[in-house]
Amino acid sequence: MDFNELVFARRSVRSFTREPISQSVVENLLRAGLAAPSPNDSTPWMISVITNGETIQRMREAVENRLEQMFAAAGQKNRQTLETIKVFSTVFADAPLVLAVFSRPYEAPVFELLADSDYSAEQINEMRRYPDIQATGALVQNILLAATNEGLGSCWVSGALVARNELETIIGEPGMHLVTMIALGFPEGKATPKKPLDLEPYVKYIS
Image (cartoon, rainbow, N blue to C red; front, side):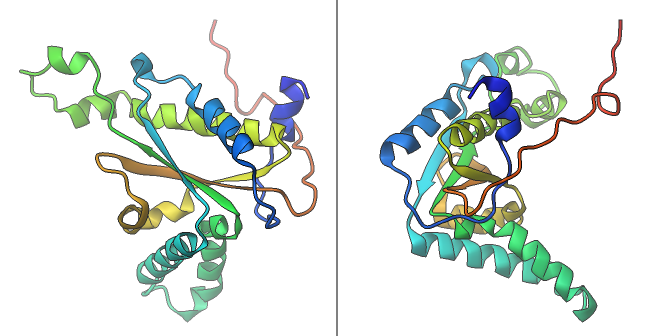
């Protein structure tokens, strides 16, 4: 599959078979992810590969419990909305393999130059719009495309991060922050290729 076909063949998949993914394929995905660009080649990542069913269920329960707490005051009329949010936030729990992606805050060379200034590291990273998070997005996209190329389904899961603190208690990495998760597995059914978006609403040329 050429690159353009691959890009448009990638779809978010939320239903998976229980067929395991071979170690060699998993390693191919990880290598693709780690080939992503990062600021000053800082490679601020750590990826946890999770296949343990009990751990994944603990993660699901942590997310569901956190959502229940958050929506406790929402009332019964919003119960259906909450259940829908739960489904989308815990889609990873139905996948045979979950990647938890962590990053550490980027320490830019400019920090040293500004050590005696009034700018904190957090303020500098905020001004730069969090380079470590940007790099993590590139890593995730590489993995999603590599998964599609291997005939796998994938889903980039951000909703679960409402329970980030609880999830870090279960699968945390010292000195790292959980940024996102990826659900991976062989798709149940066939996804329809994505139709390319028109450029006009999303692109502005400045010449």
